[in-house]
Image (cartoon, rainbow, N blue to C red; front, top):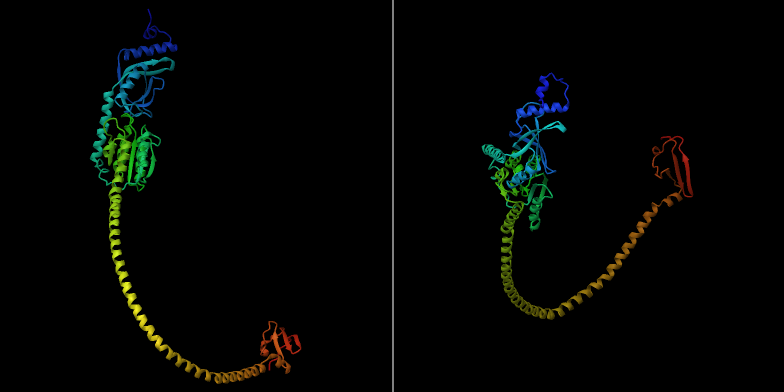
Length: 448
């Protein structure tokens, strides 16, 4: 008869146990506290998850723990035969398990001796509780935003008639991102798009999207657009997160969403200025709005201007033809009148020119007879004045003065000394004579 762990202790068995005996005791204790056929329901928050091998492994933490540096962790495993059908069921409901989700599991405890690990084997996941929790969180967030007056705040902002400067929040390279930009690039309008990169799913997505919206809201844009392609409910969980909803509701710029939904609209859609069902529809709506402005503000006025311009040109051409005919008739009349006046004046000039020519000829003869004597007298007077100027200049000629025995004294720079005071002791003087120049040095100046 096999002895139990309690029998070994009761018989005074030494307390130095083998590892196998120790684990036997642990198994017995677990079997008493948690019978193997007794299924347990456990609630916790997913910390880590992997299913690369076909099996699913979860690290579940106590999300309500308030003591200790680290919350307790439960290692959960779900074998392939159970996980694959469960995963298909979740996918059909639009749910994908992700870190941060709080779940309720059903299964049993198991001691895995090779790793000395106490784990939990999952048989079932309470989908109803999961969906109910997500719905409850969503309803609570909407109630809070509505109480703060934020639900309709962004929707009340007016969208510019010409929203050309667009801020785009999304993940470049994704299908939804390309679909939205494709609509803008295919249009004839020159959109200016400022991209703020942000992941659109995962644990870090909500804060990244909120930061991107806040940053673009301060960039002086006309419109901000958030895009993401289709996905499961959990893929789109970021758009039910409070940071994203608050950033959109509080933004001073209208925010449009183009998120491919598989079910109800997200909280972000509700607080946004406008929600479109897909990124493509969002881009198409933006192009349509700009097209309406172009049609109303440019195309229609341009067609009216073109039509009226043609009408005005035809009218002005008719007026121009009438004015031309009137000007031509008036010109011919004026030309005929001036031609008659010219003929009359020509005849008058012809008859009076001969008499005038004879009178001028007689006057010219008389004047020429007087010009000769006047010119001769003028020449004689001018010659006398020239002789007087020559005599005067000769009296001031330097060479004539030198010939008469005078000299010219100058300093080294050639300046003429007119008084003895201009000569300083020790200065060099040059004295010019008729036949040459003498250099001398002043030893002493004597006044008087």
